[in-house]
Length: 240
Image (cartoon, rainbow, N blue to C red; front, side, top):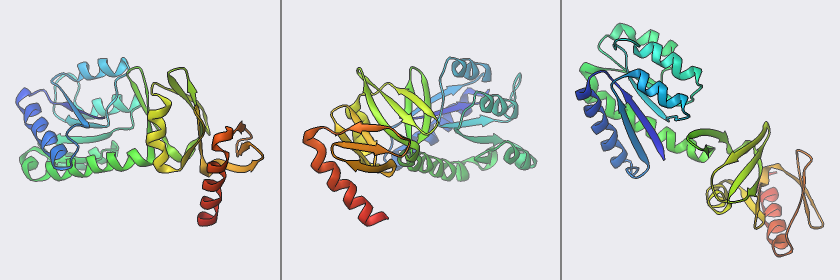
């Protein structure tokens, strides 16, 4: 699920922008994957984010009372959030300042009909591309993306999973079967019913054990030994 937050003190503008997002999601075949929330008060967004909510795309009006879009972007980055920020503004002179704030893009409101659909289409496509490069970890209301290449192995943890990466452990509220379906597309293989390993991090296979490059040794179930050895041999033949 991709989350989009729209913040503008004009309710009419938020609904116009929501319609653009929905249209681009539909055109991209992502209508079931995109959730949109609108806010007329920046403080409301920040309150939800302090509770753990994060978004993949933030569409922020620059000229708002109380907290303007530039200040809001700063506070979003402090959370921190790695989502794309798109600024809406009435003033072209704002553009250089917008890019200084690590903006994905800025769009003039007077040119919104022409430019916003293109910007949204590109942002949604980038989100979808990152979905294969990154794995999205969900923990309560918090979302975090981790590079698939940095995940060494995954272990079933009750009804959920624990991911072991190059920088530590991450708890993920998904079943091992769900994780397997996602990560099997990017080189992960099951060594038993409760563990997946990243084939890129395998150093060697000896007897019924797989040795990972972080020093961890994991046992392969008897039923999976032949399959695992064949997949690793084929991968090394094609990639080394």
